[in-house]
Length: 590
Image 1 (spheres, rainbow, N blue to C red):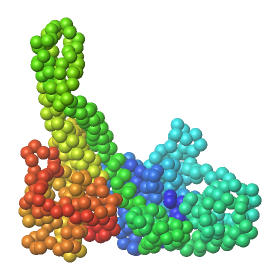
Image 2: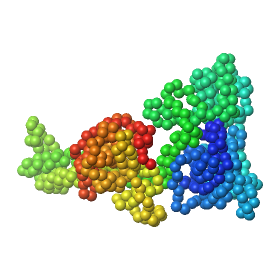
Image 3: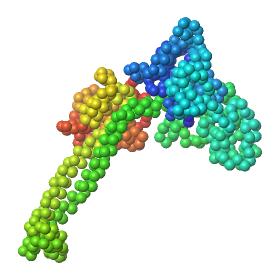
Image 4: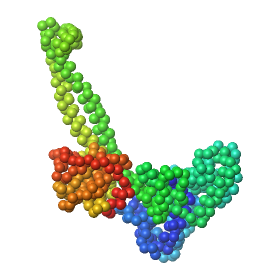
């Protein structure tokens, strides 16, 4: 569900209560489309995050600090100039639009009190964050819109701010009664009821329209024109109940997760009944907690992928190029399997020199390699003597034999390289901050996938050390999981003690996981949870019954010249576990 206008009203109501009267202490811009306001108020220090990211525009309070760039972007510096130190008067929503306005009292350069507004337009690909002055003119926007981008509405410094155009042909649901809504429903309406509601009312998401249809008629796909008088009455009652709840400010932050795999599916401001038991409903403590649970992890992964796009492109191109090369080598290797036929032809020619002569195109010989000794024909080169024809077939045999040996070695080397590149892509998904990405770049330079030239525009100073994931099992054992191959090597080959337990998904790319035993006997609980952590930090994190090998660190060997993260082991046991994200996150040490 996108953050529709009605749900945004619930979010704004909550935020207004929490940050009203606070002062903007600091302004940060962690990402291109995102700002964070650090606020001091009666409730202590708060962080208000606003993002205009097209795929997930939203605003809510966050707990953790965002990682900020070394040099603040231009919009961030402008915000610090005009907003830092301002008092938050209110946060409100104009009409029923996906727009939130933060009123700020501050002073200008001369010390004269002024009111500025931060307009947060949370409208999908049209999302924007706009700062305007008390004269209604735009000071600047996080995303400038000129005439080349939009001929209808420009967003540029110095222009007067205008609200986004209203949706044509749609009514504000808070200005209608249920009877008025039903009166607009014609008897020949062929649209499904939820689609008709979506096309008739502004500020409503598809999820909300389906819920209203379900509460009225027990299903969402009924043609709107086929409703009976009783169903129309129930639709009017359900709509009136919905409007009254919104106007009264009765909102419930509900998170929807799939029962089968506990994956986060959707969110709403009221209990959702339409899924009839297929979804689990969890009421969160606040809308900020709700939006964080729904967006934050996915949003963090998207931010990291954007920042790592140069690496992803390079590694993906190298992987695809290597895969094509391996395909061609395997085809060539397949062709060498008939090499014994060349040797056989050469020997049959050699056995029949007495009846062959130069200039013949075919040789009819007895195939004494076959038990039935049939007579067969062998193609000859008329330019060559019988002896030279025999040597030609022997050379083809030797060439194919040599090719098989070389291709087998090259394919094994290529498969190891391909496995390594796949592991790097998995490590990019595990990255949580710029330090992790910097260490990945360092690894790729060491292995020759990236050149120093490709990284020269990155920060030249050595980045702060990236640290592995740290967990604590339910019964107190420490568990570490590497974020990339350099960390995997460090954990498995240098940091861990010989008696510690090493975990890794069987034949699946993933992190090296170390269960620190500290001289104790590991419990079944610790072993199971460590195996779940290994499965979670792998490509099989969304699978069930994932095979995870485990053994003492003393049993690991790293071949000379092997790629980072590659080890071999022969003594091990295998556990089959299903990773539970909620449980694993509860074990994490932050």
